[in-house]
Image 1 (cartoon, rainbow, N blue to C red):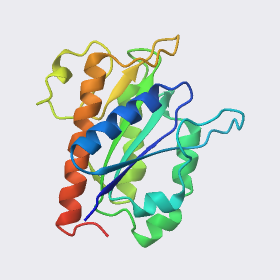
Image 2: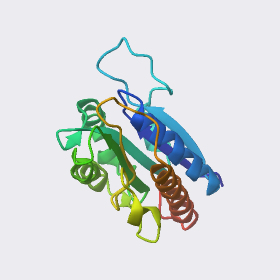
Image 3: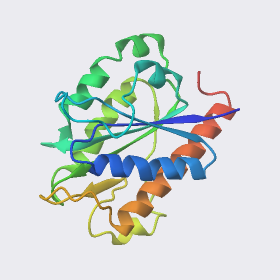
Length: 194
């Protein structure tokens, strides 16, 4: 039985996309399929790095990693608009008991990463998803000098929008993806997901 985990993100400068790819690698290490999809930007001139997500892919996933850059402590408007379009999934309970986690990037160390991660969890909770983060058993969580939180992977790009993830950020994103893949497989195999 194949387990498919959707890595859904919005990224303007590429940092969140870099995290998405690292998380997808961790999901695959766990033995699940990672499907990386982006949320279209309001600016139609930019070319997305990955295919644009369709609502059907959200309905069909067995697990979800959701990423967005920080915008004043909240997710980007594009990401919020995507969730505002999911009422039909909510009405049918299509995401109930599916594993999920969140990830983000900001321009500064105190740019609102943790506040954003917490606010990004709200629509997932309303959909009845099973949330997970990064446990302190991951050694990088104790020593990171840039991104990385117990609420989910993060990256600090700086004002120059550096998309290069630090070693700690990479390891935390991989560990998060692997854990999400394992949890998605376990929930699907136990028959908890639809």
